[in-house]
Image (cartoon, rainbow, N blue to C red):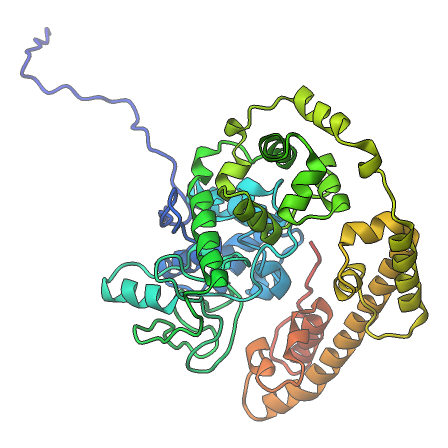
Length: 467
């Protein structure tokens, strides 16, 4: 039998169709990437949870925990088993927790741009110290404006920076306390929702908000400049294919020393109000300036933060930066003030001889007596080490005392709540405990698990394994 084919005949392709890979979580697009208003990673997590009709704590406990924490038991359904309060504050920053959460979310959503919702681009040039706020901040006018326009409510990354005090668009101070219950709260927790109070669920936006800061002062204008400058820096993150290297600071100092002080690094330090030991440490790469110092330096040099960190505008080579170090007056770079050294050693020895409790850190002592931290370590490294050892010992003792208090309260209050017909959960216990912050310790959570197991509330004991 002969089969005749005609051009009008329908030809069937019998090969198996190909399908693109599917993401486990919704392919939610972040807001504002490439703009100063890019949303924060914690805000993205909250919105992703809304898309899946679950609280953020549930999303993190069930989907994220297995990817970011070793020995994690998904049966706990507890966000506290993944991130404590200190960890959750750093999720928008540069630490390993931010890296782990970005990788986990990109694996689950198949997105490749979520690192731009954090400060990971500048992990080598921004130190952790003083980088992020401990509490969530917001602009009531921005939130109210987005609500009226019926746009998505979210929390920009810019608001999480510790040095950003004002909204660059409304020129009003950012707020930290709920106008209804006056509570402050962390950027992400079990039931977080952008634009609403974590404690009382009250709306945080307002269009009748009266400012408490004189907008005509030099200080306020400086904070406006800081917000705009850092907003522009955040907007440029997608144009940097790789994180900026640590030597960026050295190249920037070299460039501006040649431009402003004829290559004299120490004269540049005097110009920008930085001590000789501190700028020397920055130049040698042993330390890097905190973000609050970096923005002040850029402000005094009349340049933006993005230009200061932009390698392309620095026409200096490695050999030129080496020459700057050699050409700087060696006697000034290595000069030691005996008077300053004796005073610092006397101060540290005096603190060590006292029975102050809790014992202060080296940084706290340096701030107390108006010295730079690098100066302390330069003139008295042995005493600084002794102070640090004692500080860590006291800190550990305070933590153990807090754990004991928390365990004691849990053993006493959990059965009382249970007798009243109230489930002794972390949330319910926190409302009646004298020290609810102790609930974030692993030992206290395990004590709660033991008590609930003994009461018949849990079918098995939960063990909160370390990462």
